[in-house]
Image 1 (cartoon, rainbow, N blue to C red):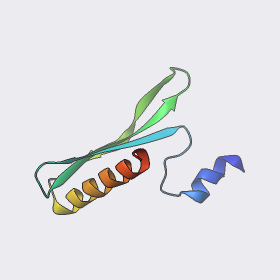
Image 2 (image 1 turned 90 degrees about the horizontal axis):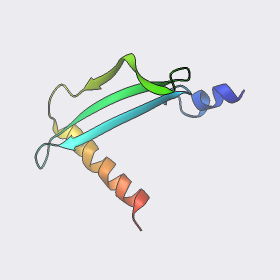
Image 3 (image 1 turned 180 degrees about the horizontal axis):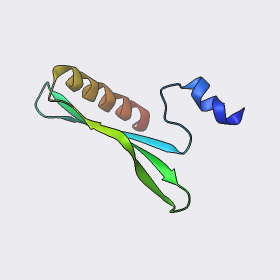
Length: 82
């Protein structure tokens, strides 16, 4: 049961033993881009490895990604600053 709980509670999250990372950047005052990757932990090698086909970049700058970038920055600030 424990192994399926992450899947039931957050179906879009990586599987246990996997880590996801997305970096958003503003390239001007309105448009943004992103780079994303999913890594899996290799217990034998004791390192995270990039999953095959598990990375991506924005096809180009967009206002939509600029809004995501600004929202993510606002969420990080509210989560970490008093």
